[in-house]
Length: 103
Image 1 (tube, rainbow, N blue to C red):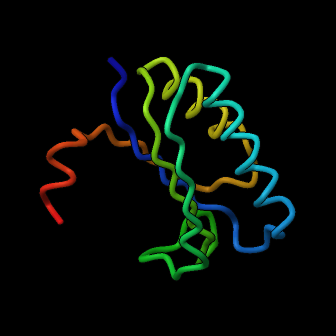
Image 2 (image 1 turned 90 degrees about the vertical axis):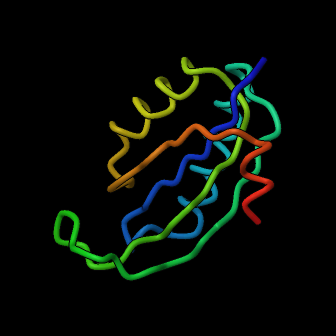
């Protein structure tokens, strides 16, 4: 059985829409190739950061929900770690049934 994950990453504010879309497509294909399923990507837009991260005061938020295993998460985060356009990322594992009951 696959676990449900949510990954949110923040792009530098000067990233173009073209680079943003190419990153989204890259990560969607990446997750699918590694065995991930039910990939849902939501663009959260530009938001002001609570504190500056490497001299940036705002960033572009992208949220990805998907089902996979821990290996996918490790490979995905490793890829994000070495991407110069991403200033921060976070992945959480959640129980789909409990998440639906919250709302």
